[in-house]
Length: 361
Length: 260
Image (tube, rainbow over all chains, first blue to last red; front, top):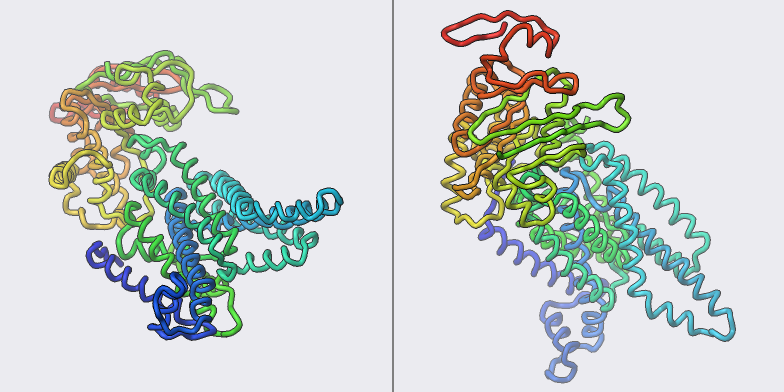
């Protein structure tokens, strides 16, 4: 099957869908807000009192403090996962690679878990020393916004590197998938051990990670992940031409003038930083990075110059829509969005496996 | 001299004896050189060493500079890529590029206009006899078709070189997946390319094909060069037996010598 749409037809449709998804995500939820109230509420939250608008105060609060950061975080997390899936598949030269499947996200969760568990334990024991008092705990809370993504990124980089080396540098699909299983299992075991030493708060955060959710969205997390997303997407997109050459094979890319080692190093690090940052705020949301690049390839072709930006766009759209569904089907209770993406994504993964069974075996 | 190999030895870790020992070879512009020898004699390894993908002892001078110089900066890498191409034996591209797009990858992010790119792609795809496949998806092709598309890509890559520059084209078993007609067509094309200021080095298995299209044959066996010279001198049953361990018979057909 081959569609190959042009930017002229694809971009307007995708943008329209994205705007629709954003509007829906702001309007729908435990509290339904009418379309005109969404606009009025956001304006009122941005410039309180400047415009004489007749909207309930709580609408403005829900929109500005809860739904808008959550919407933006969804776009950032989905965009990052879509883009990173596309880039990882390029580096592994294999359309089955995905941050969740090959254990990159699990590695990030271990990194973030290390900070939460040992950070709070360390802060607690330092705080027990009377002369330090509550100062240590406050300090920890102050630097947590930075430490969490930093450690998560380190975990993700380590996991990617491990899977890449064990997977015979992209030559063997089977080894890559097996290495991914091993890394995920190891990460699961480490997280399980953390659960025994964790405080109640840390435990709650860790459970949320393993399911994947956007419920923890704050303006701080939007800002941190947003900046990292912007920077990493620009840097990765600049290597799109080199990634295309790499698809031909390492030796071929080398003969086309690509610094293959440098390229792979850069991808592993940038991909790790980006995935680490989003996992540290949203947990492991699987399969976005698998499904999205696949759809984009069908619509626009496998050229990374288009695949990377479109995957980011479609990933953001898909996760936003999924999150809107996840928090409205059982409202006021909320389904972790990671469960929803897995329900859709896992059968898709099986379908791809079945489709490729001859090449893999 | 485009490529000068001096005193090259290759030894794989944990191997009992070196794969290649103290090999010295020069390659010249305008020549098609066939690298021949039994399986596992180190032909492909020699190509990989020339490309800097394999560590070796000795010295390789590539396009007038020590090989390592070409990999020091991005600028040098790109400059090398315009003058130095490799057609690998297998291509495992798993993504649904059309054949046209694959050939376009050879032109890279260069300075050509859209129209110039189109003309070149058409030119080289026609020369490799794959223009009719241009809109087909690359993974759906047969092995031989893939190889010819890749050849068109490598040729378009070398077309980026300055017209005054000399070039090197390495072909790793270019005929292994091809049918009879295309074996001859591809080697005839290699012959033409050599006349366009290029040194062509081809790993081949078919002695008769090599004898017909190459200007020079180099036979490797047991880690050393067993013979090096024009095909007419090398197509001798005694020498062939020494290299391959197989005694053939030389027959003359329509002006060509053929080994049966």
